[in-house]
Image (cartoon, rainbow, N blue to C red):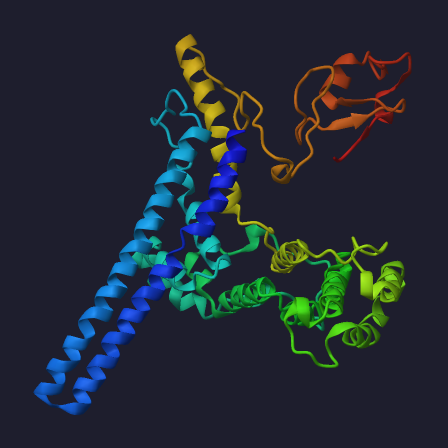
Length: 436
């Protein structure tokens, strides 16, 4: 219940407390002052100057009062939301140990994650300043000389006509650890394109995203992506709804006729994979006067379609760059926030009992992360109750049961074994390693 109330309070904060109103007030004050200065400069007369300043007092006062009123509304809403945050998240009792910082030796990775996050958000100026300040002066001078020789091609989406294989994907580890390399114009240009396209999608303009998907259609099809068709499908529905909904000019290219023309020009190349969906979109023409109550109503419900297609576009764009769909910095900070209460509780209990967890790279408790943050399958051996690792992988027996390799070796007598869960017997070498 506390989280539901917090979500309502957040919606209230975003709808009522907007700094844009205060910014508009400041812009009006600047315009008034600029206009007054121009009049005084043009007249070059003391009487005109005195009269202009006298007339300027009341408008400036009104705008300043409006500015203060808008800022007070913002501060009030922020204070109310702060109270909601405190009510929703109970304060963790205890503190984390500070004697040892496990990330102390990973400052380069942390700086790179921050720089990449700023670039992904389109904050290129901030990212450049951060990189210049985070990089040691000696390394900055040396890296600026070598950066000119760095090829940025691996940091851009592959051209449709590139000679490299379409399944060649760059990983996050392939991005240079040298921060100044992230200042390359090619990388910033790629993120600027993504940022611009996402802004267009937010404004319900699908054309930039469709053009990008067509330019990279070979790579997208090799990945099994349906992004191009989903964008074209949404554009068809957007045109189908007509100027009363989409706000586009009332021309032959809009409305039902415009949607038919768009389908004829663009859906032909998708027939081999999406014929049924195209048939459904075409069948909706019969119910164009009463579409919401027709069998095709759910297909044409696009209340969340633009948000979904924006998320798909971000995922595919970053994949072609060799990056994860979400910012690693955001994922790490969110996961850490979710795990913090359990970590503080465990640390306090372990300290009170005089014990400590000695296993490296593994927590002593399960962290309640959402499914969206579970990137790897985990198998726990039913015999040893231990999680499998690369050195102790899971193996499947001919009878279908799965154990850890070390558990199977302990159960075996010589080269033979008996399954601990069924009467089957077999030879150890018949067990096959499985990859989850």
